[in-house]
Length: 291
Ligand code: NAD
Image (cartoon, rainbow, N blue to C red; front, side, top):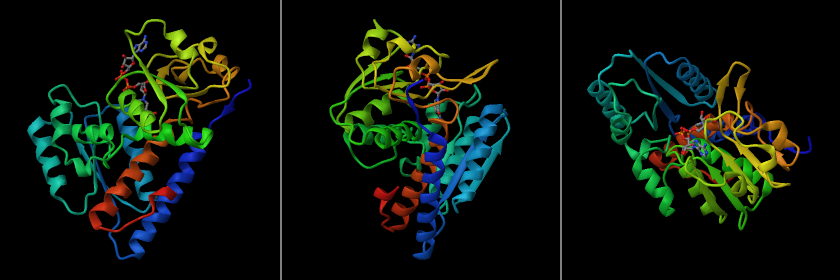
């Protein structure tokens, strides 16, 4: 193995520490603790773990955590009523409705109901539009975490050839927008892409967000490329990424492991968005460049 292993767990812990310091500064300036409301509908075990981890990290950063656990048979209107009350609650700076939702609830309708200025997941079409046009808003947490890791590894990304594999609204598309904003030359590959190995092989940066265990082969990777593996695949052998880790690590210059790479960055960036929301809503300027 020649690649450096990118330690997302350590990077995220340091970021959460910097966020906690800023939260304390906000309180010292007479401000209110940032408040994050997380809504879980049903009993999906993976979602329950995510929500528990978000709650713990929110408290540890000095923020207020409001948790809502609704039964799996909750009607869409009940959830929309809760979202409306959270939109109106001045103590709530960020609202997150954990996906997936049960079949009787339309996720798009619920996400559209969240106030875009409290949409710390960055999934509302208004925030997708802001990202696409370079306006301040909320950027989805997982792709933002990937960009932080890339900049930490490579410094300036301008002019680099980046390939994003996956075009979902929550990872692939915002990832591509963020890399365009960093002046990369971006290719988005997806399920209909022809010659994926050839496209991956020309990239300086490879971001895999597919959801297929070890689909991206080591021999596709250009020597010296940086590989970011967003994939989380639950298999009998535990959590596996979308990239053949051992193969890619023998040619890449740096690579994120699964677990311990991109995953921990998501919650840290969620807290970052919640802090940004609180500072905007309270009119307290914070130096976000330090985050
Ligand atoms: P998704 O299913 O919405 O999208 C998958 C994308 O992969 C699609 O755009 C599809 O076109 C593309 N794809 C499918 N088969 C392909 C193929 N053979 N070749 C090329 N492209 C192909 O998934 P998602 O929500 O974007 O998540 C992707 C992965 O990232 C999943 O494993 C998910 O668990 C993981 N994920 C991790 C985090 C985190 O680390 N915190 C957050 C979100 C998603």
